[in-house]
Length: 77
Image (tube, rainbow, N blue to C red):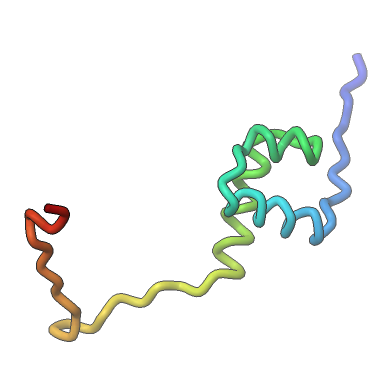
């Protein structure tokens, strides 16, 4: 029996960026996957790899230099 081979030709960078923008705009992964004809897991993988590559990393404050903010319990009254 012959096996079907799926050849991944790659996704254009424009489509990857557009899916990242849609994901950041709070559109569901299922809907983005339907728009681009891929699976929802592929959208999550793309957004994770692109997001980590494009977004700045948050650096923690050095020891003793952090900002401590005390929130009042009744701030909304």
